[in-house]
Length: 324
Image 1 (cartoon, helix red, strand yellow):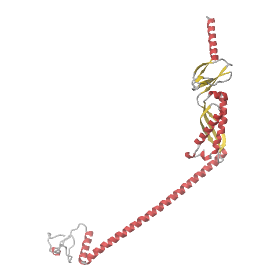
Image 2 (cartoon, rainbow, N blue to C red; image 1 turned 90 degrees about the horizontal axis):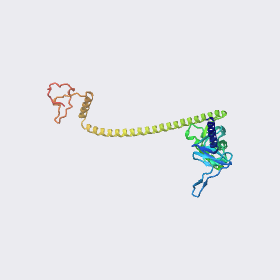
Image 3 (cartoon, rainbow, N blue to C red; image 1 turned 90 degrees about the vertical axis):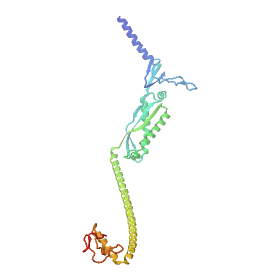
Image 4 (cartoon, rainbow, N blue to C red; image 1 turned 45 degrees about the vertical axis):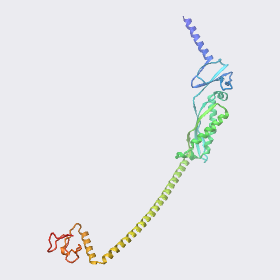
């Protein structure tokens, strides 16, 4: 019984070893290159573009068989996106400012067969990407410092810089034939050297002072323009009011002249009406009672002497006398 268990265990171990030697698996996040004597073959395609033989590249996940080493070997690569950060490097802008910049690149293996033939390993690919990415940083030197660091977001040109770096890196990777595709190139961090920081702050301070002085000058110019316009409008309004007053005064003088002409014909009547008007103004709401013998045949009150004050009865008059 013990011998049977030992034999079964030995067969199981042998089966596992044989499976390991003659089979391999490709996960869902991997692709593999199966080489024969360290050589990879291209897929066989007919005239219609149909793949007759897949060649050395295995993209579909699953179990595959192979000849044991050293006849065939398997090299697996990840299909996911990978991020590579470059080291900090000091660069100079177009206006002679120094910057310490760190960039990054998002990449993936697009053609595993070309990747295997040119690079073989991820470490070698990262080494080449470091070199290419360092060369693309020269784009930053074409821009001024204020286009990289600025409180005004519209003046910052980081997006165009990153786009130019991406296009350059893609072009160089296509020329090299590494089988790598780049999705994004970005600036991870920017710093100023210590000896440059103070000068930058002074320049920013002087820039803000110039902007403040410009704003004050523009405000004073606008205030002067507003005051000038207000004075001009005031003069126009006063001139119009004076012209209107002169016209009204002339109309009043003309109308008064007509009344004076009428009153000049009967000065006693004019004097009497003036006294009546004065009494109405001095004693509003009062009633004037006069004797009946002072009422003229035409209904007017005679301005003869002896007229009584408003509110009192004339001597010899009755309460039911006529009222005016």
